[in-house]
Image 1 (cartoon, helix red, strand yellow):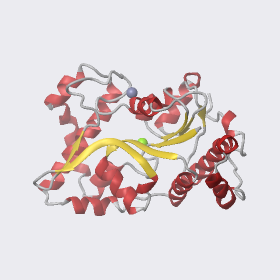
Image 2 (cartoon, helix red, strand yellow):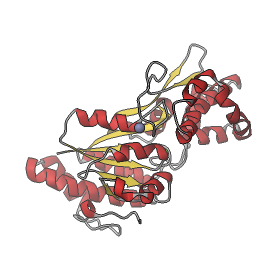
Image 3 (tube, protein in one colour):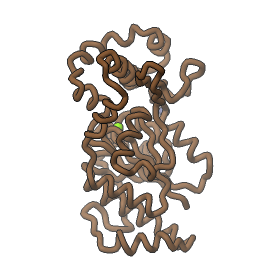
Image 4 (cartoon, helix red, strand yellow):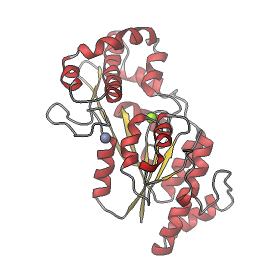
Length: 297
Ligand SMILES: [Mg+2]
Ligand SMILES: [Zn+2]
């Protein structure tokens, strides 16, 4: 069975929120805390207000803020290269880089589903030499226009039709993305790694053979903890890059041992010998993760 590992980006692969990082590093924090309350006056926002709830409005405002932020940087004479240079300084745990390399080497299909944008995600992953590990990045579009200004555009074309999910903001339903990936073949086992409110919808789409890895004490973890019975997938929490690497490596080993039995995958046997055999886990011993549900009720 194919193992598909889906990563959120902000506060999951990277330690911080990428748009907050850019705002802070260009000294725009004060301007943007003043700007944000005026965003709903935008005409797109008014048409959206009638059809969604408060938390998705907040997430959608973040997308509008991203685009407004790009406009402001352009007005201040900042180039796309200046923004790339700023993104390259975002802290990223060495354990997470190592976990991504190992998962890729094991033959897993790695993807990103993020409410950031393509420019930010690609710039960071390329800088850390892990962009090639991902088969697909699903996020809001980013284009540099003829004036050299970076424009952020929604993932879904929500103005012509709604994606129909009231858990998610109109620009991106991560659950729909998961359903699309699963539709390409039912023989897939998902591992979903995330932290935020917008990772809850895809978490609800997971089945008992899948695993969700919520970041402990973040919003996704809180939502799962509030009503764990709604979650069909196994739950494996993590606090930081080190815990994520250990837990993810164990999960891949558990799942890919099954894969090895059925497929006799020589490449993965090599991976087991070189990367996994000597490791031990304080979180869950190999073989037990399938049953582990560590989020408290
Ligand atoms: Mg996130
Ligand atoms: Zn959704």
